[in-house]
Image (tube, rainbow, N blue to C red; front, side):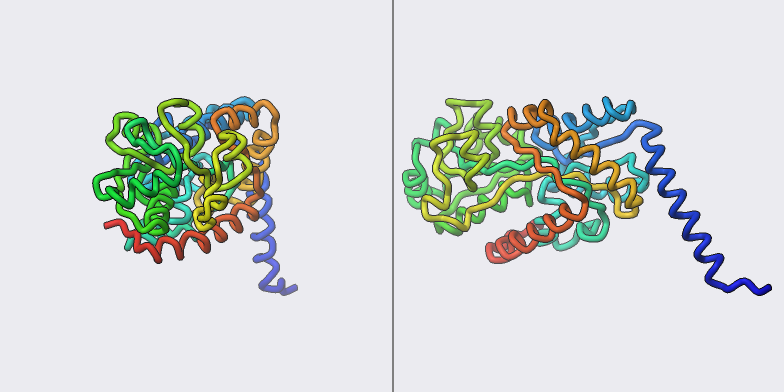
Length: 323
């Protein structure tokens, strides 16, 4: 009896599917690493440690955070892309590596649309325009007037080239038609220290930095309503001030190497999202000024695509490039 050629192929496919399912069912059997693209103490580092603590507890395997700062998250992204696609190396990415960097760097060592498997968005936060004590303006109107008069002598900081705070700062400059020099740092914690030391005078930051340094950083406007105004009540939105184009939010999403089995990606996503819906863990995020944002892998992929459609034209219109 002659066996049709497709039968062995079907059998091989069935065995591969069974192996993948078994891998997901037994996972994890060893420690898991979450890579952060910025220095310790910043939001990606804190968010990764909160998630890691939950996974360590429920899975009984240690989750460690590895900080690989530099190049707006590109170094960490490349390390993730080159890691084995077995679920034991994950990356908590800010928007730069997954969205904005592809529009600013002439060449990237990875393809953000093809080299990663989206798992879930972990947390989001409105941006807030802040100034330090040395900057005399205490309203957005006065801020704009100072920059129009003397912006070339004023610096603004961001956690790195290509991050949304950087892109948002350039968007604000072009919107107001003012000058101000961008000073990139290697993460949120270093550049917050920079603004406190008056190395830079303003930034578009996340609410947690303002909350933690109340009285030293002064909020003038938030990019979106909702969580931004919950954490900073009374601070107007850019839209209310007549600048709706400034709407945007910080976010951090968990991804894995692209070839990670789908069942494994789904399992990790489901467990992280369970943490993000847990009242105790949600409170830990909100205490640092972030809103948990659980999504399925498919929803996360659509979210990335929407962010690329939003920020790509902004970056190109403002000719933001990284040499």
